[in-house]
Figure: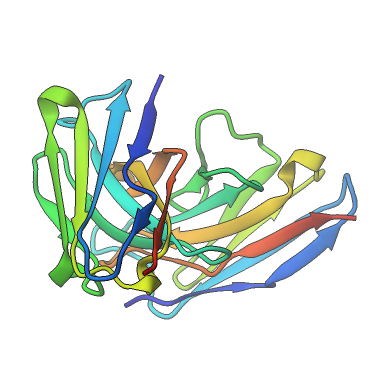
Length: 119
Length: 112
């Protein structure tokens, strides 16, 4: 079955670079896109960016200058890197499979990883 | 950016009852190809969001027919009938018509 699992450090300091990994199974990264969605504690969902089956990417302009999404298809892994972290980047980060032909819908989600940015 | 406005912010319903959640967008969600890319998600307490409905009215795999989506343009609705205890949580609408992809701020469903 389709599964996604995020991993990465839970605590970061301001100005550091966040690196998260999404390991997927049950589908191929060359067949589906994978996106990252952030959820500040107790708040709503914010799309950050997506890497598509062909390897192209789309980013939210709000974080585009700080964000990079890449992948290793041989390892079924998608990577998020975001620099210049600030306390407002604190939240739960989800990776989710996306279906391009259904309007970039997020059809399967990982469990999420909580990231806290604090000095 | 397309702003998604959900109402109400919260609602309480008795088991077996019916509720409707509204999602209004600041711009039409009709894509150039004629499709309307509006989805609904449910985030149960302590869990990740899960997809319920996509392209306005299509139920995702395994989703009960108690959930139905409707609407067009900028005015979309999720209806839940015969509410069950497992339906509690926060419901989000999300649009995929235009970048950046955006979500509504959520509607919290509580069971009386």
